[in-house]
Length: 352
Image 1: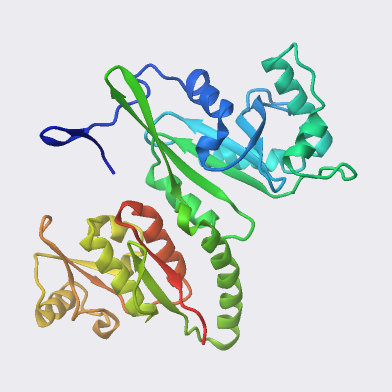
Image 2: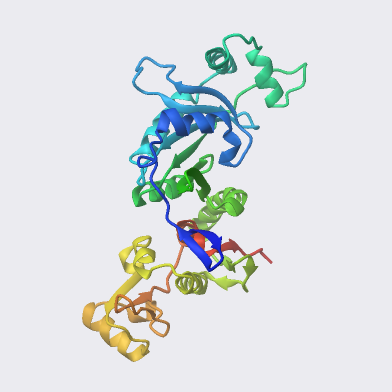
């Protein structure tokens, strides 16, 4: 989404800048600002360390290490680039390294962090952590073995987002992608902070989805059937529930209507799931003829040949497969997460 300034003549678009061009650095600026006010990342966090490297290899350091209200460690990795580099791999290594951290080690890290920031102030680090975690006076704070990850960057490449979406399918994984977009306006620097993955309004739902998906996969393996239905949601308005194949078609149609490029949608699917034909046609017979010429052995009834999707700008026609199985929810979730500006998402329909 773009940033616009209201003027006497209407709306004037303000182009985003680059942190490098604005003279802002990862550690000296972004890390310092976020550590001072971690709530800008969307929740209440207690920063217990910066540049944490409590292991033998001193070259490996976590940009920011924090605690959330549930006692889980949060690894926060920062990049000022538009691609994010390989930050997800780096963060996964760090998360593994701190997963066994004890409350004593966390308190020691927090005490050192506080001493470096305010050498003249003395605190009881363990008590401060207990207060943050809302542990009563008779209790002792304890840390969860689950470690969360927050990737904070000016942008994220397709490799990172694909990896994060896949990793978040597994129960216990909580990886978030938060984008920082800088703007310069009249000599001031403004930063637009947006959580891209998971969509903020879908975060709790996706946790439930992981659990439901695991149970559904087990059930489907046992009897080979899965009759799940889905609601496509547009601008918060829930459309009537559909079976898997029709939900996928409706989801793609709504995304295209709201500006999602079909070529990008195709890149999120397996090659067989969304076929592409040269030229623009909405005639079912012509679509079937072109598909048969392109792939003579293709099983045409398996595709929505009566509902082709056209891209007039690229002069191409796309045809979606009708056969959707256990990967339906992951594909729907991936589509919703990759195009948040469309405000098209979904939910699993309630069972009768």
